[in-house]
Image 1 (cartoon, one colour):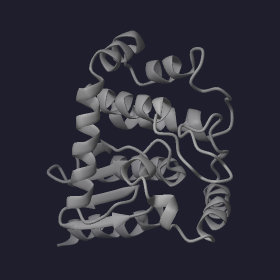
Image 2 (cartoon, rainbow, N blue to C red):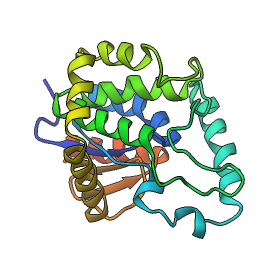
Image 3 (cartoon, rainbow, N blue to C red):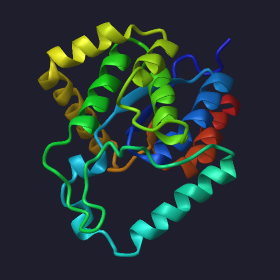
Amino acid sequence: MPKHPHKTITLFWSFRSPYSYLALPRLQSLSESTGVAIDMRVVHPNILRNPNYFKTMNALARLYFMRDTARTAEFLGMPFRRPVPDPIQQNPTTLEVSADQPLARWLGHLGIAATEAGRGFNFCLEVSRLLWDGAVDQWHEGDHLKNACHQTGLDWSELSAQVSAHPDYYEQQLQANADALTAAGHWGVPTMVYGEETFFGQDRIDVLAWCIQKDTTT
């Protein structure tokens, strides 16, 4: 019997975020152990939601970010390597970002479609492994995404056809999720909302679990 049949974690999440990838297994375990459902809200990468992000970022941030993500993955015992290719097309020296971002938009649209089909969390779990665990190069080619899709019980032909046929609709849904993230009081991912509380970052999952646990004793 679920302990919290009326509670939900709203999860704002991005395919390009390594911390989002690192958060999912623990959030899955938390959901399974408490009965709290996860409402998946896929958003575009921050650079698409905030084009000025890299222009205002501290010069030390990128180096720290690269070190910390690898360290956190090792701490959690999760395989980790940055995606090949990166879903975001960006000049590695100047950090300038291309106006057209077909891979990032494609992933975002697929995530929305999978969520609407009732398989959003599992789809994001499988595809984030494909991107971040280092086992696959050229994740966007061949049958990699198709196989990940089938692992979640979704039909790849149907899902990809839907996404191809309605790009404007899926962009609108991604924007709606971004607006909801702002309304929740944050701008980054992963962000979890439980009741009236907002938790930003994979390092706040323990605090989120503590808040859920408090509900069982009050």
